[in-house]
Amino acid sequence: MRHRNSFIYYGSLFTFLFLIAGCKLKSNGPDLDPDIESKVNTLVSEMTLAEKIGQMTQVNKGFLHSNEDIKTYFLGSLLSGGGFTPEVNEPEHWVDMVDEYQNMALQTRLKIPLIYGIDAVHGHNNVIGATIFPHNIGLGCTDNPDLVKKASEVTALEVAATGIHWTFSPCIAVPRDERWGRHYEGYSESPDLVKDLGAASIQGYQGESLADRKTVLACAKHYVGDGGVDWGSGMGGKIDRGNVTISEEEIRNLHLPGYLSALEVGVGSIMISYSSINGDKMHGSKYYITDILKDELGFNGLVVSDWAGIDEIPGDYKSDIEMAINAGLDLIMVPESYLDFINYMTELVNEEKISMDRIDDAVTRILRIKYQLGLFENPLADRSLLGTVGSLENREVARQCVRESLVLLKNENDVLPINKTGSKILVAGANADNLGHQCGGWTISWQGDSGDITTGTTIYNAILNSVSDQTNVVYSEDGTNASSADVAIAVIGEGPYAEMQGDRDDLSLSDSDIQTLTNLKNAGVPTVIVLISGRPLIVEEYLADWDGFIAAWLPGTEGQGVADVLFGDYNPTGKLSISWPRTMDQIPINIGDDEYNPLFEFGYGLNY
Ligand code: BGC
Ligand code: BGC
Image (cartoon, rainbow, N blue to C red; front, side):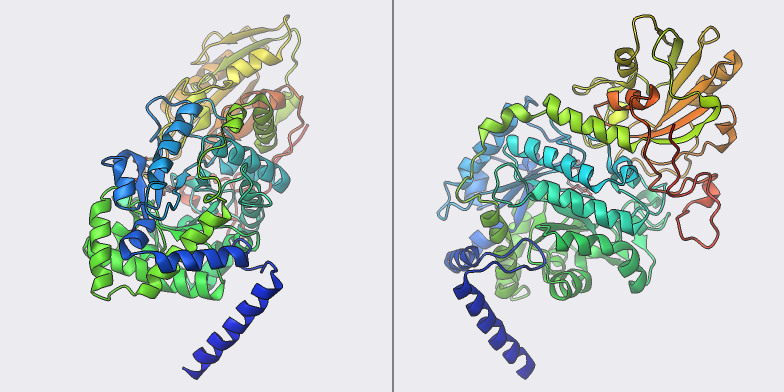
């Protein structure tokens, strides 16, 4: 107790000194500003319990019973879950929608603005017409923090242009198992790469100042260990939301480093993982959230739950809330039954199962971020930014990301780069002319879709754009009629998926891809394979038939970047940020394993 008192004494003395010095204190999270700290304290002291609980409540916009509820329940935050768009999915309509919600919040007694969040995880990916970047696995292969930062700057601009303040990104998972449907959301199986690229991304989103109208709040997710889950322990007996069997030391060596660098660059929010560590749900883990993240690492930003993440804590909903809030969660992505959440919260505080100190800490963190974002001064969107959504300039940055993310894995007889002039090129494969497939999950809808889901360039169209008039490009999806071609480009691989639905214990090529390959082989033309996938697929038995092989991951809307590499306008620089397994039996396979015999090693990548 004496220890605690002296801590409080020196603590206040220190606060006093830095207040009078008027300086900014560098801490773990965004820089603290004494002026903001005092405004937050004053505001918290004026708030009723209902107003405080409202601040801690985040509702998916699609689950609001009425816009009036924002006012009635003092809701502090809304989000758009994957695919929850305004009725007309156009940038102006996003602004109108968010501003309308905000105007409701501004009608409350204290006029505390809402913070609106969205998964802009590879560009502003819910918005039709926005620039879609490669998913993180591709960015991992660029190993270029400056470019990753630039990509996040562009995304922040497009998000801000639609009136939204917060992106649930970057995912700094360290995915260790290719069977996980979220493998592509992580940069790399290597914590070092995740550390560098995650920090760069946060700097891009948050800029020099959160208050800059062109920046947004970043969210490092999912804390902690999401990428380390054991196959078989997750939903449906698969992997998503499962358990990590691991020592604390390994957590600190493998899964925590990304958070250390995120904190260093001032990340303002952190999302908790659905997964468990040694049987304990992260959403209920006071040890990881309060003891490590807030106390040991000094995180001063806000901790948000995942979508209904607290519901997965064993016990009934009321006990879930008690456990989660006492574990240190500040804002709950409810996201649906907010009346139940608010009622139980109120009961729990009245029953003294959740202390007022804990509530005040949560509300302080939420309001601090709102002040840091400048929301009190500028609650409504800056409509002058609208024209930036999907601009050519932004798409150019995404195209550069695509070029640098491609990994050249095989190039026999110099089949690549392909001659742009005079040849006959056969384009084949189910992913050659499919924008939805090249974007993958988390694009326009939650799980992603097939076909022309937004504005962009398919790989086939990019090839047409690249070649000269004398070149004959023929498209044959199944690879038939190839015999007269000089070269065939087959774009094969996976269709779109996201969390849960992408968990797979068989990563072989599909039957239709195999048929396409067989047709090309029978035609006897030199063949280049472009693989569109969120993870390495099992290809060893076909590799000998391929002259060229490029891993293109999930490149997004700027398919032109793929053609730039195919035709040698860009000499490939991408290097594998993961290890490529030969067989399913080898998975999980990661750099540093005692036994390590992948098809392609971590860091592998050729050039011309
Ligand atoms: C995902 C998060 C995402 C959230 C909101 C969850 O299911 O795990 O990554 O940010 O939904 O859409
Ligand atoms: C939402 C996603 C969310 C998921 C969680 C979906 O309906 O659109 O954003 O991540 O549910 O289960």
